[in-house]
Amino acid sequence: MRAFEDFKVGEIMEFGPVAVTAADIKSFATRFDPQPMHLDEAAQQNTILRGLFASGLHIVCMHMRLFADGVLRDSTSMGSPGVEEIRYLAPVRPGDTLTLRVEVLAARPSKSRPEMGLVNFRSHMVNADSKRVMEMTATLMFGRRPGDGRREVVPSS
Amino acid sequence: MRAFEDFKVGEIMEFGPVAVTAADIKSFATRFDPQPMHLDEAAQQNTILRGLFASGLHIVCMHMRLFADGVLRDSTSMGSPGVEEIRYLAPVRPGDTLTLRVEVLAARPSKSRPEMGLVNFRSHMVNADSKRVMEMTATLMFGRRPGDGRREVVPSS
Image (cartoon, rainbow over all chains, first blue to last red):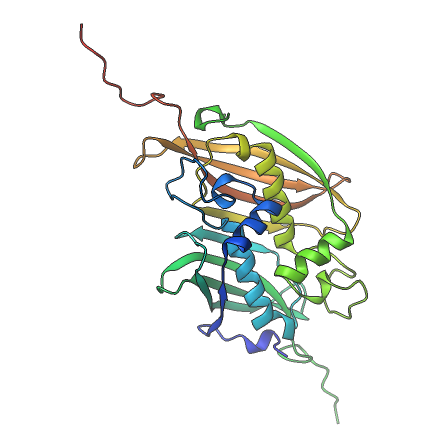
């Protein structure tokens, strides 16, 4: 099980790929982002990108699932205080397959809570043409191993 | 239909509320964020927050749906280049009802694409106790009204 101490700055992890279908794109959009460009191949719209493409938040959610399966489910994950940035770089279309690449940007023990540490990740979702479609920077909290780096009572002999 | 010109800096909009059930929380988590604290009331976990609570991304997705229904579906929305920041401020629990408050922070015509403008929004999801549970700043692109603010050919007489 991964704890705070197991994330090394500069470490790069890769997960996936996950395939994206038109049904996936429309199903997500119907529930959370019902705009024509995410629902209907033939929609008349004035977007820069013609044709059906995935909601940006759908890409973020697919990224989350890959990261949860690859790292968080077998970790001391304690949740997240937030996201620093998300950039949508290229459209995700039906038939795309996406790979998640995650780099550990920074890791530091919490000052207020010695039992946990904060890890800063930069993630990219990358399509089969090696094109980055989404970039995200976010912070997660992880439990620390007992005694690691903390002040301990050393019995005097 | 709302176009770029209809967003005024300082304008505040409110949408919702939306009710959140335990089934909603688990259904989202099963699909996109399968961690114990979002799946199981009785999970043994070392989070700061005890008991079942919604995935942060689930709050973001509920926010997106309220904003799409309230603004984007009847607008000249052209998508988004990204999100500047998301902060998770308080847990969302089964039985909560959330209201979306959105402020227009900035609006400017695009330099490279005269047919569109960029609008910067700050959003809060607020629970029934008026507590902010999520804050987000994001940019969206909207089509401009024909001729508005653009150089036009004036026929000489």
